[in-house]
Image: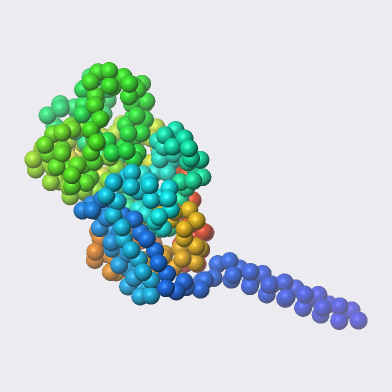
Length: 348
């Protein structure tokens, strides 16, 4: 009798273990691949490195899944077009332009008709690039430090294109105890331009603006081209300012080697954004996100031949650090992407 009872207890224990294993397999195992899927991937302005990378990722996914249709779209309105597509949910995927934390600071007070944090939220799928802040000035301004812009009350013409750059400049001003109203009072002006685009680079050559704060892949070939016509200088960020931007906007400290740009006079001390391929909230299922990640990694050799940026960032060793950095900018990892990276043993 006692032996029979022990046997039942043992059978019950085995059944519990089997159920638990089944649940774990359901949670973390490879889901069924979506068939004949259609994805719209929004890049950036035509002719920019971001748009080229979007094209590469789209081709990689269609190479991996011939039955998928991936349309790669360009934002001819620049950052405004990207925001519009996310708001209207007319795209599924996009390449992040600025930290989510900074974006919320910029746009929450502007889009008062939205619950911005809820309505414009998105989730990270895969790392795209690390984009250092470039504090660029024309050499003929005479500015040699970031502090000079504020302490000398220099009447700068500052490039601005509406996504994050202004808030970074405002935060830098806040660190030095200066507001944008103060800067306007001593003659600073906004110029709608982005030197990381072909049009903006041409405007900088023509000296339509002489100061720009942007986050961009490095080296950016457009900036190298600008320097051939209009001599550039990059102003390093002092340690206290770097700490302030990390805390306030979710950036990460970094240093660019002197060899990055021929106009650098020494290693460039700055902060960077960890940029990602992201999914508009509610547009990409967990299974789809899983297979987007799998497709990109399976096609990594192809991607590496087409994009220097992606070759450097789509690396297994980067995944854990990238996933941790998402939290610094209040950005969540898509559950389907988490499942893929967890299954590979790259994150816990």
